[in-house]
Structure formats: structure tokens, C-alpha cells
Image 1: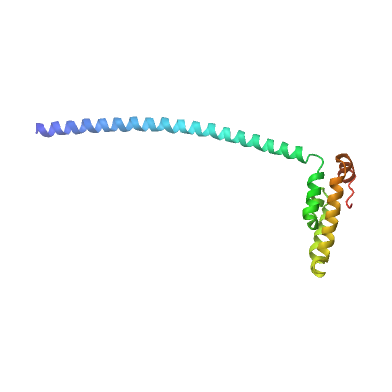
Image 2 (image 1 turned 30 degrees about the horizontal axis):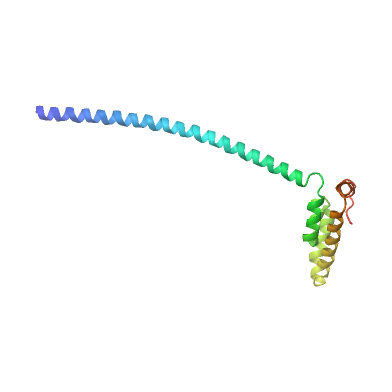
Length: 150
């Protein structure tokens, strides 16, 4: 019986040691989890700040390129995508942009492409006019003065 008692005491001691070791491991895991959580928060804040800085920089760059004056953007779009009237939408001439789209697709379908050719020619001419005007003249004529055609 004393062997059984010794064996039982030894098992209880080992069980106690195992419980203590498990408790220490759980405490360490909890500390590790808290550290990981803090690092994740810091990383998230850094990423959020970097994304915000990137967005601000991209907006600033776009504003520097196009700015108040949308001359280059409207001119290139008029030359490349003239029949679709996208340059009209860029300048805020929605009615004229819709007219160009309708002429391109509806009249272009009925006349086997003649309408699209006509709006393409208009877009090419407008693109050249836009790009050959000075920045100030373009801004005053098409953005302030709201001159929709040529």
C-alpha cells in the first residue's frame, strides 16, 4: 500500500507540475497575444497613415497635372475618344456629351458609321483647338465662359 501511496503522491506531484507548467504557458501565450495585438494596432495605424498620405499625394499630383485647367486632359480625350464625347463630360458639358454619344451610336448605326465619323471629326477639331489655346484663354473660354462647341 505504501507503494501505491508513493505512486499516487508522485502522480499528484507530476499533475501539479503539469498544471503549473500549463498555467505558465497560458500566461506566456496571453502575453504574446497582447503583444501581437499591440503590434497589429501599430501596424494598422502605420498602414492607415501611409494610405492617407498616398491618397493625399495622388490627389495633389492629379490636381497639379490637371488643376483648375483641364486643357490637356480634355484635348487628348477629344482627339482619342472624340466620338464618345468624354471630353465634354470632363468639362462639365453633360448635355453636349450626351448629344455626341447619341449621334455616334444612333445616327452612326442608321448611317453605317457616318454619324460616328462626324463626331470623330468634331472631337479631333475640338482637341486641336483645346491644345493650341493658352492655358488662360482655354480656362476663360471653356471653363469660366462655358462655351460648349468649338
